[in-house]
Structures are given as structure tokens and as C-alpha cells.
Length: 379
Image (cartoon, rainbow, N blue to C red):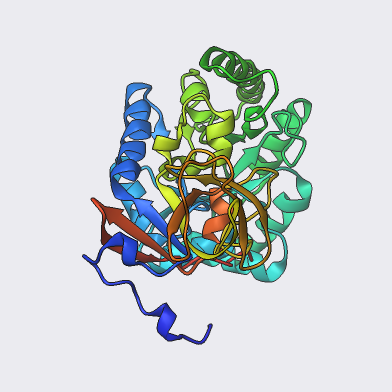
């Protein structure tokens, strides 16, 4: 645990949002509520389960919020450590979209499988199926195992032509239950020829048709496929319309970010609930200021700058660890030391993982302060 300092004292509830010490992560609760309602309504309309990904916020209170507002659809986690944090905070329906390897980790996983009301994990081949079976047998539990298919992302997942063999492998294990398919089509987001809603829908349906064909082959081999889980924030609203899909797993949609604004037809700056608030600490020239949000406050893991909120011609051009270099030459506004600028981060998930707390605001006042309890829980 880090040593608490006066700066770690929680921001006071009901205090003005513009008095929150910077750098700070602010969440506009009205926008977040609208984002949640939109995906929940889509899931209801298309008769799919909304199981939201918690890796974006890593915050149990927000996981409970998602669970409540999705008719108890449960949550998704990306690491075993995230699952443990959520379980310790009363979340009892979790899907782990990751392959867990190593005896000690598998013992942690099978302990969770025996404790949670509903738990499933992900596999894609013998190298993770057989060790999972051995661990489940040691613990004396049955673990739900979801088979991931590689939809073309080229990361993990069984190839379509291997789908039947891999499903049969899982089905043969006495301590595993074949719990369906996961088919993550996130590579569609950002493809050069996919920009409009019509292009997104056509491309998502193209991939889901291939998934459906694999599902039909698995079922023809005598194995029921009860669940097909898909979706990123950008693709869920299209893939979720396909009849093969039973569950969508978006994550960033609660907050959104600059990358989604740039590449998704469904996200505008007004849909971005999360911003990083910064303060101008230096104004060395007429066309340049420096803010206190550098690379340790806004993660620079993708080639896209933070987007200034409410300021045209204000460009975040460079970052060192605690300094953000801002070109204001294109702005009509004048910035002085002490002024505040809020930024939509390029990648919200990795930015949240840099911070201990999220500050929820409504109508200019602090209404919530959340601990990011699963930050750094990568094991």
C-alpha cells in the first residue's frame, strides 16, 4: 500500500468541482447515466444480455451500478486480480475474459469459482484447458469455460477451423462445463474502411456470420452453445443485432474517450463523461502554456493527443511526466497561471489505471468519490 499524504484525503462531497485539486479524474454523472441508459435500452430492444466490462473503471461501486442498471447482467473482468477485488466487494456474477496460466493463479481462480454465484473463465486451446481441468479437479469444483474464437484480430482465440475440436476438448473435461463462445470483434474499430453506421453494421454482421457458422458446426457435433458473448463499445451496438449473439460486453461506453470520438460514429465529445482536470502552472510564451497533467496523469499509450474540452484551438502537443505542453496559438482565449483545462483522454482505460480516485460531479458539484480499488491489479 502507498503511504497516504494530505493530498490523498478524499475530496469533500458537495464541494464545487472546480475546487478539486488537479490533476484529477472527473466523471460527469449525467453523461455517464445517459451512456448507461443507451446501452441498457439497446440490450433490452434486441433481447441480449448487457454484461459490462469493468476493466475500464476498475471500481466496485461502478460495477454495482452497471449490474443494477443492466437487469443483473453481471460484469466482465480482464484480470484475476480484478475479479478478486470485485468479489470482495459483493459482486457475485463475473465473467473473466482472459486465459489464466500457472498453478498458483489457477488455484485462486478455482477458489473463486467455488465461492461466486456465477463465474466463468476463458480458454482457447490445450495449453490452458488441461491445466484448468487439473486445478478444478484439485479443488473439487466445476468451472464454466468459455471458448474464445479468433475473429480476425490475430491475438488469442481458436481459429474457426479448430472450433469443433477445441469445443470437444473442453466438453470432455470432467471438471469443466462448456459455457459457450466468446468472439471479440474489436479489430473492426478503427479499420480504415469502417466509419459510418452502415459500414459498422455490415462489417460486424460479416464477422458474426462466421461466428454463427462455427456455432452451427459445434452444435452439429452434439455440443450445445448456449451463450455467444461479443462486443466492444464501438461494435456492440451493431454485433448485438445479429441473431447468434446472446450477450454484449462493452466497457468504455460509460466514459468514452478521444479514440472513440475519432473512430466511432456513435460517440461525440458530448458523450465523454470522463475528463482529466488540469491547472496551468506556467505561461512562458504567448502561444504556449504548461499544465500539471503529463504522462503520469493522461496515459499516452496510443498515438492520439488528449482533447481539450470547450476550447477550440487548444492543442496538447507533448508530455513529460508531470508536464503537459499545450499550444494555444489557435485559440482566442488567453490562459494564465492558475486557469483550469479539462481533457478527454485518448485512452480512458489506461488513464484511469494511473489514478487512485474518480470524482463524480453533477451540476458543478462533487456528488461521488470512488476509490479505483482494482488499479494495478494485473495479476
